[in-house]
Image (tube, rainbow, N blue to C red; front, side):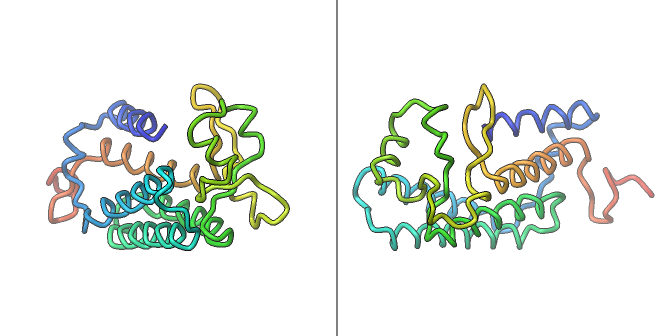
Length: 192
């Protein structure tokens, strides 16, 4: 889904008269932070799914470190257009995960729209510690993965995901459409 959204953002930027070359003009500060954040997230998921790691406090620590790195990256790059929107979505996701002890609430309707295989089977067996089916003890359940995206995605996302994806979408299309700024702050070096 994320890749589809990026492709649509690039296409919209091109339709607005932009150029793919404008993407090379993005100057990210400390890009290693976002890379480390993704590595931490997927390492935790791999260790959990393979059965190597089954301690909720350790998984929670992986989640917190992942978000701390992500927030540091967003803060250091806050001058990028619309990154604040992606950051707001990330804050909402982290909030609901934090109050649910490292676990994102998921709609009980997930079994109606998804075949019970892989990760969903682990979740239903209580072995997918970063998600849980919404129950009476779930806090802020409405910020969990409760919004059903129709076909072709057929998956649940959170309000935070929608805001985060909107921010990334707007950022990418804006950069593609907008042109690279030079040192004076004008587009493509033209005089204002």
